Length: 373
Image (cartoon, rainbow, N blue to C red; front, side, top):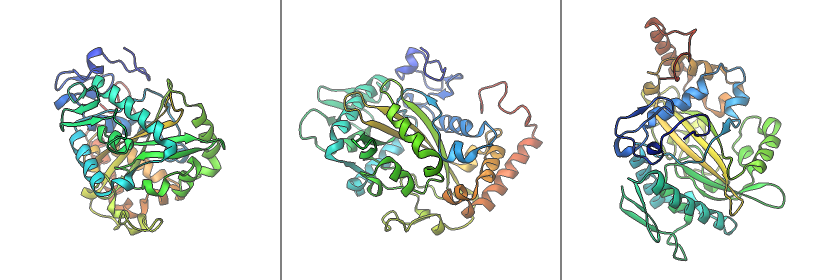
């Protein structure tokens, strides 16, 4: 079977039945324990997509995250699923009403998304999920969810968030042609809070987050893009950030999660922590229109790895250092470069030099094999 983007998968791959340790070169997937995809392979493939091309227009291409192509909306589970599930369960217990919200306007779309997940996951991951007459059972955690009895036992976005590693957001169109954030399960976002963005229109979500040059270059195109998204033509994009702590749910280095809105930021982070505190954070984001409600579902799958780990990959240290240096002032401020650049760039330069001395073919970068493997 041919997937969007030209990647080929067999029937066994689609159903999660590849034996442990099998490597499928074309798709860069490695299936590990519990038939899950290895996270590092996906993270470094996302990194490759970001770093494979010289940064001639970094601001517009990567920080503002232009959409990169068409691909199916398929939540991916990997060998980090237990950690993600545990982190989400803990955050739901501690602050669920602030991280999972559904407005009356977004309720039908939230239920539609939950029903789609309950249908999809047992087919894609039969060793992890089982379909039941009432809904779905998580075979890993032994949790069973009833999605047929009304009222539901919990917010539908809370249940949806428990099932997958992705954070989830639903954008609903209104007569003013704007799309509004009407439902969300935002548990592992790291740098932003659902409670600050809930019920905002798309444009205000971006401008309130100080996304560089959104008004000037991206707003009109983004609005037109949302209007064109179709159920059978989802899209995928990837972005990346640097983080100087190992906390997936909320990066405490930028301030307390419950600080007043607008009071947290990179200015509160300790400057130039040792390299062991530096993490590469990338998001695989997808958009797809829900066919019944007409709302757009936005999935956010985070890949989170130590810089010391990804810097072992050929070409990555040099490309990442080049990318960081290429940021303009507004992008550098948005991504907090001033707080970590001295330690991080010195380390990346040293790792790159070591790769070059070890025979790295800089001129032939990315040629002759599926980068970066």
